Length: 507
Ligand SMILES: Nc1ncnc2c1ncn2[C@@H]1O[C@H](COP(=O)(O)OP(=O)(O)OP(=O)(O)O)[C@@H](O)[C@H]1O
Image (cartoon, rainbow, N blue to C red):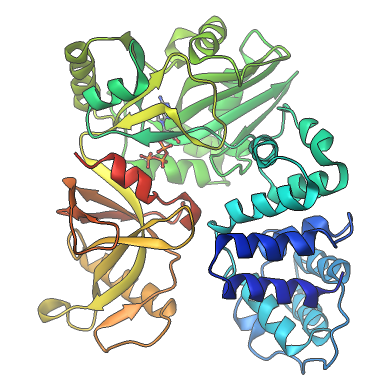
């Protein structure tokens, strides 16, 4: 298939506002693409490269070669060149990479060049499109969309799942199983404003588990080999030797466990989140870092033990498997209770111990991989949301010349964002300087000299006192006393909280 076919469909999808219309355009193309190129087409249309990052910056794309007049580049040819670009590294790599980038762009028309530049910069990435793409794959392959979703949670890659569905239909989708060594999208938690509401949602008795503010980890073991993945399915095995050793010491050779790693101080209280995050992301000198900032491991779920998949088993049974396997000190502290006062006391204790709050879990719920399942509900003393910055206003007075007041949006699962309020609180001078620079880079559209609209790419963690009804904003609700806690460069826009999550917090 030619790249131009994909470019045209991508443009048609952007122009169409109706969901069904978007699905129709995508399904039509997927019905035509051959099995070898289906994965590439789905990647590009989702705004991603199969190679993820290829290391081409703006500088490399400053002066592009003359575009071709006729479109002849095939998806395969483009993909092969991108793989070559990614593979070039080491001495003199800049020059070699530039030459390959020039070769790639010299084969494209100007319409394709524009598409490819935006693709390389991640500007076409839209998490909201995932749902649409799942429906399109279902439509083009004749498989139910539920089957596409399930395979996706087990494989985590829409291009791989989509290509399989298009080639082999339902049967190919059913062949996706939990595999040791291949990361599964982790189950996520919904929210409740307090412990009583969480218990009501989960159904009693429910399990109350400490919510540790560390880094989510999924550990896989096959024989003597262990692999560890993050919430975004990145392999971090070399960075977390403590976890690898803990898993190797367990009496099962075939397992997949879910948990959290966190850096604790000698007195057992947690370090600030950044300390754990930076320890986990540091790749060099791990042995020395480990001495200075050891990681503690807490497991809270078992997805597979000795050949048995537990994903569809109720929480209570998965816990039994977990407690048989994992030493007491490595289990996340928990309490099973059906009493609000007891549960509130447990919540107060965990917060006093310096931790984030609780995750309240329904004893009957299966492991809803990749979903914000109703079976897990988080409760924190301070409400926080991960929101997307939609615009920023120039400050005045001491903040003259700085972009200050942020317009905050929650993700609409149907696409786009719903504005929930503004805040200029919680910003240090350093943060103001950083955000001014960042948002000017992301500025788009006309400005009234006051408000700068920005591409919705930055996720910020906001603390607030509650959600109230408000006719002023399109979602009919607004945050009370919103303030900035920190930016979340570790989160993608697709990971930001949705309007539904916010609605669940309205009292
Ligand atoms: N006992 C626990 N059970 C489940 N998740 C836990 C637990 N303790 C800590 N966590 C962490 O909390 C997260 C669950 O909340 P959620 O699914 O909303 O993720 P999140 O968006 O990263 O939330 P937050 O920013 O509030 O940590 C998990 O991803 C995990 O990292």
